[in-house]
Length: 93
Length: 93
Image (cartoon, rainbow over all chains, first blue to last red; front, top):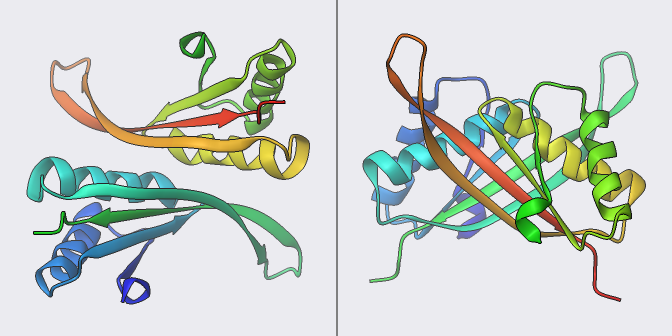
């Protein structure tokens, strides 16, 4: 279940991802995990904070993990990119 | 003690902050906390990951917190900026 509720945060506006999170929760998800890498990391934090401050104050930050991914460039080089995953959870009723 | 070991991550190169963390630990700190806001958030994650992957593999991510700060612009407007704090810790010997 948890694995299905992953939202990959990229370069779109914050509100796009906020809506995606709200949709997941409204469809019955107990948890939604935001995943981002590189410069999109700060946008993933923006999404989580917008959710908590503006639309779903009952939602909690359940877990935050950081990591590193190896990515192969078009030139064949391997570069390291930082990643973040932020798990938001509704308190159980 | 912990409050003294805060490193504010801004727009300088990642290696500057990596050196600052290493210096704090070498001077006897048990914990070092990286604090960043806005776009510098992804750089703070880069610093933490570089420390763990490349220079101090024994260091653990002890805690990650996200939040929101209200900032007043030069025009007098108030804007919200996301923040992160990442606490790195040496395992006790």
